[in-house]
Length: 261
Length: 279
Image 1 (cartoon, rainbow over the protein chains, first blue to last red):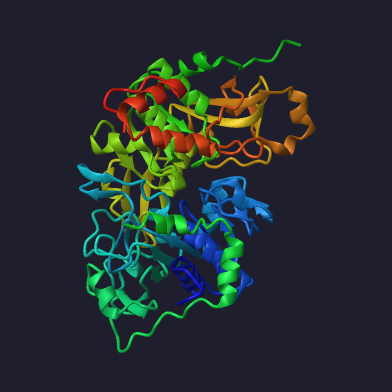
Image 2 (image 1 turned 180 degrees about the vertical axis):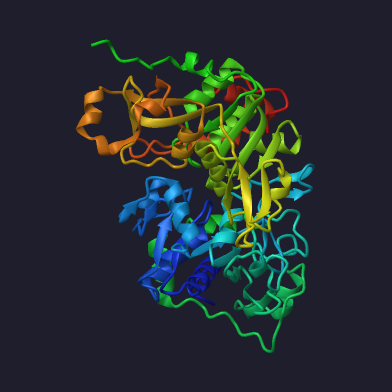
C-alpha cells in the first residue's frame, strides 16, 4: 500500500513542526525526536540547531545508539558543552527554545506524567521520573509532545502525577505563573494534535492515513477539540523516507514503537 | 621544601569515608561516567541508610539500592534508557523499601548551588505548576517576589556530606581532569559537598597538569581524596576511553527476570543483594 512505515510517518510529522529558528535539545530515551530533529535540519530547517543530550552542539552522528544521552550522538559536533550547568543557563535565558516530551500519561492540556502510575506513595508502577521535565516545561517556550501509544491509558482525563507542565490548568494558567510559550503540538501514532488558542485543550489537527476521527476519539481519555473536517496527515515523501533511513540506519526510532502496548 | 600532601587512598578506605546515614552524591549522567567501582565497594562494605543524591543516573543507583545501602533517594531520573527500567530501584520504590524523593534536574542543581553559595535557597522558574514541589515542601517551596510579584520556586540548600565523581586522570594532590572536559553535573556536586572523593582511571604527575592547565576540571583544593580506579566507571562509559557496556546492561536485565538468578548475578558482579531488593 505504502512505501513507508508508521515510525517514519511519525518522525516526518514531528519534523515538520520544527521551524528554521529552532534551537532544540533532546532528553533521555528520545529516539523519535532525535530522528525528527535531524530530518528537519536536513530538509526545511537548515538553520535548526540540535544540542544532543545537552552536551553536543549541532552534531552529525552516523547512527542513533541505545541511549540518546551518549557519545555516539556527538560525532561532528561544533562544541561539547563541558558542564550541564552551562546548558541550563541557555535554557533559562531562552536561547534554547525547544524541547520534546513524552510521558506515560498526558492530559488534555499537554501536562505529562513520567513519575508513577497510581498514588505517589503507593505506586502501582514506579516510572523513571521526570528528569528535566519539571524544569523544561516551565523554562522552554516551545514544547513538542509525542507518543507512540495513543490510547486511553496514555491520554487520560487526570494525570496520576504532574511531572512536567504543559498548559497547566489551561487558559492563561502559564501566564499567571509568569511562564512564556507552552506546548505547540503533539504527534502520536494515530494523529497530529495542537492546542486551542484560548482553552489550551488538545485539538485534533490531522489523522494519519487509515485512521478515522472516531478511532482517535475512542483512543483518547478526554474530550478533544474537533473543529470542522479533520484532514489526513500528509504521508512522508520518498525523500523524507530515504533520509530517515539514512539518518537512523539501525532503526533506533522503532525502539519506541516496539515498546508500544 | 616539605612534601605535598598525598591524598591517595585505597578504594576500601575511601568507602569508609561514607558512614551510615550520610548524604552521598553520585557523579555521572545516565550511561556516562558514574563512579561505579566506588558504588560496588559501598555495596560490599554493607553501608546502610544512605541519603543518595543521583540527578540523572541508572546503574549506580540500582547497585546501591540493590545492595540495601539506600534509605532515601533524591533523583531527577533513574533509568537504563534503551535498556529499560532500573529493576532494583523500581521494585524498592514499589515495595516502599526506599523512600523516593523525586526532584528534577534543575531544581536539584539549584539546591546544590544554594549550598555552595551559603544561601538558604536558590530561586528558579523551573518546577512551577508541577506536583513535584508538594513532595518535599520542606526543601522546595513556591515564593512570590515582593518587588516584582514574580512567582518562583525556592530550592532549599542541599549540601551532600560526600560527593564522588569519576575522571580520567588525577594527581596525588587532587587535581583532576577529563579528556575532553565533560563534567556533567559533577561540578555542582564537587562545589557543594563537604567531602569530595575523586576516582580516576590513573594517577599522573602534577607536571602533566602544569603542561595543560586549561584541561583541569577540578583544582586540588576542591578534592579531598583520590582513588586510583582503572575502568572505575564500568559498565557506564568513560568516553572516549571506553563506552558503556551494552552487553552488561542486557545481561543484568535478563538476570533480573529471575530472583535467584539475579542474586547470583549481582553477587558475582557487584556484591550481596539485600533481602527484598531483587527484581
